[in-house]
Amino acid sequence: MAFPTRTYGNFGDEKVIRTAARGKIGSLMELPDGSLYRYTLAGAALPAGQLAQSPLAIANHDMDLVVAATVAVGVLEFTATLGGTAATANQYKDGWVYINDGPGEGHRYRIGAHAAVGSGAVMTIPIDEDGGVREALNVTTSLCGLMANPWNNSILFAATVTGVPVGFAPTEVASGEYCWLQTRGYATVWMQGTGVLGHAHKPSVTTAGSVDVHVATGDASPTVFVANSPLAVTTDYQWGFICIE
Image (tube, rainbow, N blue to C red; front, side):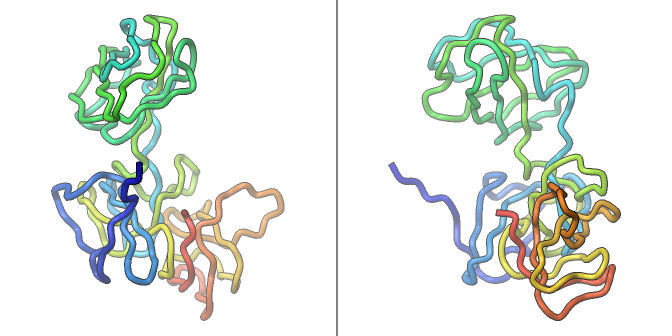
């Protein structure tokens, strides 16, 4: 069965900012030139041309949460006990719960809308996909983790790596606004150091939100940008091709 994987926009649609959601977080938009964008809720201010990352993982949420009751195949929600950090309403909506150990391990499930949950409390996790749970889960022996959608509360990419790159802001975005982040196509991005024509560039490890040339042998940093001419000086904005996905 085939489903559409993206929507199609006009030039300028990528710069439309809203204070209320008008689509699914993480959904894909393509413009007439083939450039791609992901629908995003900003969790921090994102300046134009700067790189964003996924929200910070929560150590008390991301692994080894105990499933609180036995779960049968086909069930559309189940419960798990959080660690010592509360969860806000819909923090994990459009994200995933994955079974990291015990019965049912290896499966992941899309999370629907959920209520706020207190520190150490039992969370009801709604499964937002057809068929529900595909392998039964056991109380106490099935362990799970919660992973936020990387475009839900995205923040400026930190100089110390704390997440994965999710796109560049095509316009100024305030915290709490819904926007589009560019993941592929030509654009201008903030440069740290001098760009190198035709070379891969990575997220900067010295200046949050910027990119730097990817030249170090053995550097496992992801390539997010390829510089085109003319070459910009450091702290200027460089023309080139975004290649996050």
